[in-house]
Image (cartoon, protein in one colour):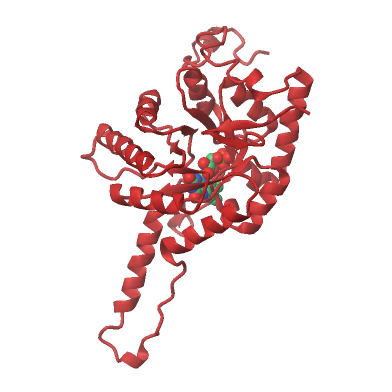
Length: 332
Ligand SMILES: Cc1cc2nc3c(=O)[nH]c(=O)nc-3n(C[C@H](O)[C@H](O)[C@H](O)COP(=O)(O)O)c2cc1C
């Protein structure tokens, strides 16, 4: 058996397969299962400030809805699904206390001040690290990309200064130059980069003529963009790269480590193949290392990054030029 241990942002993991933030990490039971089947660490579902704000608005609406009615007609306590940030913070604290593996918290806030404020509160729960989930759908025509990026850099700088645990950033792939953004975030204090987040995408039900909200999971092999930027970054960045999106098998993990990843995060494969599949992925990684004679992840990490690869175009080729010039593009 090979040594699958690795260090992510200074935190020791028994293996590089981390359960990504999702509803699977939003209950103590499933966290326990993830730990039992072999997860290297878990990222708890994000504290979404937007959700808390919506609940607060709903709460205020409930309180004022019957202002003009007779007092006896009013329910004493309006229904409140969650207890705002307090309930989430309590849950994170409990999860950290019970888990025998590293636990990372995740945050998606709205305003600069609240990013800092919630980050401090999450760090105070005792978690091993904090992931900043940076995505908001742009809705304004007048806001330039540079303005949004500068705000994200400022948030990372302030959060990293305000907390004493390592901070990672979970990024969208939709930057014109992700390398530039990552470099700036690194300078601002981020220790890890989760490449890349996969967002919930809206749909429409044509029969009911209504918006639809499907659970759209990723597909096997969707890790391409993550692999590309990991390969480009390895050796040129002092932070850790954690690959995410479309990582389904132990061999996917092998490929991403060969490109330069420190670790990976998984969600969809666990929804599609059950939580126990994480253990299978660990075994597959271990088998491959045994077969290849590797004792440690570091022996092959980055071996096929752009820096170490024999094919300088491997990560920069963006068009099918060569393939199209071949008489048999399908390789038949
Ligand atoms: C049901 C569900 C809930 C999720 N919740 C969160 C979340 O709270 N915070 C977050 O950063 N990402 C969340 N994600 C995104 C995952 O962490 C992950 O980035 C994404 O699913 C891509 O990885 P995958 O291809 O392994 O699924 C969620 C994904 C799913 C499917």
